[in-house]
Amino acid sequence: MQAVCIFLEKFNYISYNITRLRSVMMTRYDIAIIGTGPAGLEAAITAKVRNKNIILFGSKDLSQKMQVVKHPILNYLGLPSKTGVEMANVFQQQLDELGISITEEKVSNVYAMGEYFALQLNNSEMVEATSVILAIGVVAGKPYAGEENFLGRGVSYCATCDAPLYKGKVVAVVAGSQEEEAEADFLGEVCEKVYYFPQYKDEPQLNSKNIEIHHEKPVEITGMMKANTLRTDQGEYIVDCVFILRPTQFPGSLVPGLEIAGNAVNVDLQMKTNLPGLFAAGDITGQPYQYIKAAGQGNVAALSAVAYVDELKRKKQ
Image 1: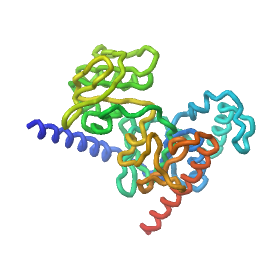
Image 2 (image 1 turned 90 degrees about the vertical axis):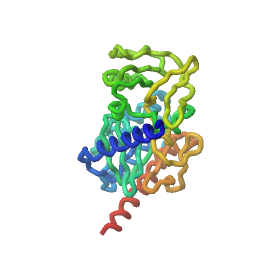
Image 3 (image 1 turned 30 degrees about the horizontal axis):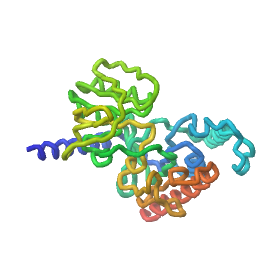
Image 4 (image 1 turned 90 degrees about the horizontal axis):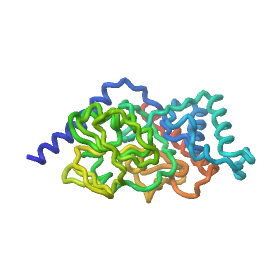
């Protein structure tokens, strides 16, 4: 009986997401680029120059890594002795000149759907793209034990997307930054109880009264067919779902089926991953972590994505 209930819950989860996907009228972009560091920006510029319909996800402040570099960067060709902040300003000027805008909605999952990709956003919307370029940089740390095994079975990366599945139930939120507090408050409106585990220094400012704040470090997610327990360094919490909310997800969690080695995505010299139509560039592909290397790989990834899109269009003619 328990197995049947778990199957039905999983079926309802999939059906719910498919229904939401079909309910939104979407424009299919040629190329979706995730990340606004040198790799993502160069990929966007190259794809735009090649007349592709693109969407660029990231921060309007561009890369946080660039914003904190106050010293001159000496090895970036054409921009001698520019600090990271100055370089970001020059990059932004080039984006403006080409009419490239930045979409700040966070991408929580990327699904390969055959001849296109479905990108799930944290506002519960979906975006379609023929090709995707990952340029999200290095994600520190590693997934929690059990996290990837239970994804879609009691582990979620999007509170606003999946909250309706847990109406009146008990859930946990592992939050990587203050930006996730709005999603936790939304869960507080829907769920009976929310355990909130902030993994940042500032004290959370939450509005819902049924949210309990616990300054503990998550260690493992356990269960049988479905996750039902979050274990921390101080105790265990029985929950119906664990929402893991990070500014950026680990590549293997972001894209199911993506081949990685450590925290780096496996790519060839054309920046191709193991998934057709999916490319990666910059720090996400491993060392060396250099702006000039990231920009070069972004250019190659965009050229490869353009060739991929053009080839699909030729096959359909």
